[in-house]
Amino acid sequence: MNDARTRADGLKRLVSAVLLLLMAVTWPLWWNDLSAGPRIPWLQCLLPVPILVDRALTLLLVLGSLGRIVLRSRLGSPFVKWSRPEARFVIFGAMVGLVLLDQHRLQPWICEFLVLELLFLVSQGADLLRYCRWFVCSVYVWSAISKLDVAFFNGLGQVLLQGVVSPLGLDQSFWTGRFRAGLAALFPLGELLVGLLLWFPRTRRIGLPVSWGMHLVLIWILGLGLQHEWGVLIWNAFFLGQNLLLFWPQAPPREQSQKMNLPLAEGPRSSGRIVPGLVACLLIYPLLEWWGYCDHWPAWSVYSARPDQVRIFIADSAVAGLPAELQEFVGPAALFEERRPFSLDAWSYSRRNCPIYPQLRYRLALALALPGAHVPPDALSIEISGPPDRWAGQRKKRSLQGISELQSACRTFSWNTQAR
Image (cartoon, rainbow, N blue to C red; front, side, top):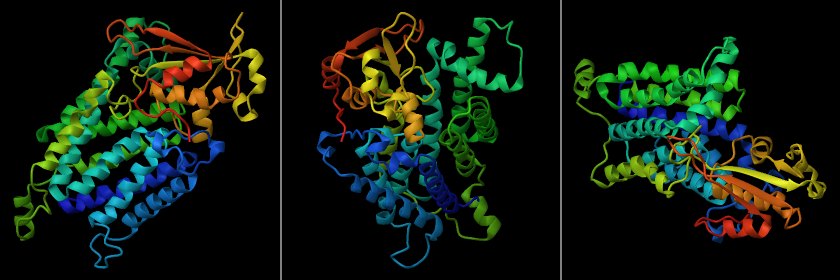
């Protein structure tokens, strides 16, 4: 496993295998019809595209990934030589097309695989492995930064902490709020430590097993403690194999060649400055989230408190007008309330087997396309809590009353908010 070409080939096959597995457990997201909910593309010009295009792209992605796994890259036939850029573009192009046709498909693991597939296209050999290492380290660092705020320590961090301690049956009755927040801070600090240890060659021998331990703990928390869906568990398991291929100590090329009595060779290398510049842009792109020019998941704000919180309410008298497949996601009204909550998160897990895309734009678009299409104009209200202050944890709140205000809010976004 010391040869750069062998590692790169193994990484490509691992990505394809896990991609197929993740698509299988989230199949309604890819092979969906209107029964699986509205499809909201990124561009308005894609609104008329029929579902047959989605299914054709899904088949291309599946066949391309299977071809990469089954067919050896060194076979001579032009029909099976999957190391060629044209063949690699089939997978990358199909993935991009599917995401463009439905914003919900840009799951965190798709964000990672899109970047890896792009790197597969523009680099190879030792250069490819180096760029992938930089990218994976940046994922850890940006994910850690997104969690370094009071809202995470007191909110989602406590949920993850419960996932650790509940299966162990630990007595938490004497734990203070400050102690709990301190324990929750260990999650982002651990991510940051892993990213830094894996970045420097001299510390990778330590960083690799630490990264394995972190992902095994996450699998424990999300699987046994919180009983999350399979997609999250499979993605964390993928990091175990990915990090093995990328960060397992590798003898210097000259030393390898001398031991095997072979000429010095690291495998094909990329040339020029365009590719390193592209990689640099990919690494710093999540920084734009702070100004609203990068969505949360592409910025690796996963299990972060940064996204806006959206609560949808429907007048109790209008609930009966919802289709039966939507009424199951309407909760009971609070005391002295004439409104009932509608859960987009529950709808997403039930209908598409995956978490909902967290962007405010997408949640409002779904509110308009799901309950908004079946209730009177004044029966829908939405409460929005903006991103929290990092030090105080406070969120600015606003509300939208009725369909007209919701439509006006949707028109303020640059990306499309209409359903196909």
